[in-house]
Amino acid sequence: MQEDFLHYIWLHKKLDVLNLKTTQHECLEIINVGQHNHDSGPDFFNGQVRVNNQLWAGNIEIHIKSSDWFVHGHEQDKAYDNVILHVVYEHDTEIFRNDNSTIPTLELKPFISSEILNNYQKLFSSKNNWINCEQDFADVDEFTLKNWQERLYFERLERKSNTIENLLAASKNDWEAVLFKLLAKNFGLKVNGAAFESIANSVNFPVVRKTSSNLEQLEALLFGQARLLEKESSSNYFQILKGEYTFLKQKFQLDTQGVVDVKFFRLRPPNFPTIRLSQLANLYYKEQQLFSKVISAENINDIYTLFEIGTSAFWKTHYTFDKESKKSNKIVTKAFVDLLLINTILPIKFCYAKQKGEDIEESILEIINGISSEKNSIVDGFTQLKHKPKSALESQAFIQLKTEYCDKNKCLHCAIGNVLLTSTSH
Image 1: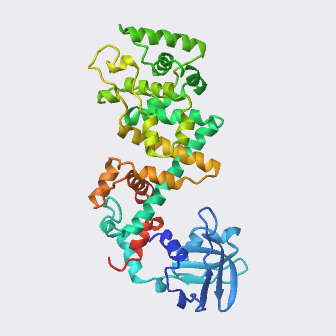
Image 2 (image 1 turned 30 degrees about the horizontal axis):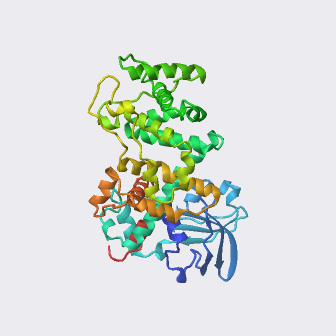
Image 3 (image 1 turned 90 degrees about the vertical axis):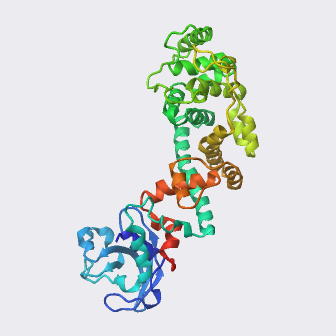
């Protein structure tokens, strides 16, 4: 048994509250469980209890056994002088204040139903399962699941907002610069995400702004910073870009220190870094005020229109500098834009609205529900449990659920875990 379980029992009053007695056989009434403390000090602040008609206000400490008070050294810590109630699963010794008065103790064992205890043990005894509740996950009602998924999705957006806020602080609140860095990383996808992010970090965004009116210069900047112009090539276009980059490098004092090498290995040609960098350059050549257009986009079709981009002319007939290929426009796909929406556009819209004090949750929900579910091992895992995500909201929620709750055994903080703990049918 974990103390977290006892915290859950106390916080949600999952015990026989009408017949409580202390270990000293005094009548006990819970007036206020107090404020849950997640830092050092007593577990609950500012609680209120009535012991034999005497009202007490102060802090509440929770342990598995009464003797844990001494194991944790609380008798030597003044922070525990104001504890009015010691809540334990098993009472094995009396606890005293510094003035030798006895701290009232509530032993939970007689007051917790065997049903909730059995559910708890079942939930946490399945050590080899993919998730603790996998045997019962399919039985959770749709109302609980749907509401929890929405909350999980916004939790995930909040986490991404923290990253964006850190980038904003580093860029002196330049939203355009932050958008560029986030988009660059996502244009690199999983294989080249770190490399593209390092390219974006290696150049100050004002340099991107100044070169964005000239597509050749902007491509030269990105390809040069990616170190793709260092090897020799007989391609005329390569020589043009190399010449442009030599000029830009001297003008803006550019260097490639810290840039991660891009990878071609095992990538499909449409995902080659050459193609993705050209598409990124084309986007900033086409849209000089991209951030404001992203923020003002009201629906998913506005975003699809905004990101209708291809490559420069050379890359329509090439995937690498030296080998010509069949001509194709290489327009970014809807599926690719969906990934940008999930990982960059919606998080930055959410973060911007939050800073402005605006509520755009309904608009975000409409867009994310209009995007198909992602495909990954976590989605596959929940599909195996008889719940196949249909939208990106569901797949994002399941990623948050698996990584932040299931993998960390935080079932007691999960809406699904709470339902299963109090269920009478499993």
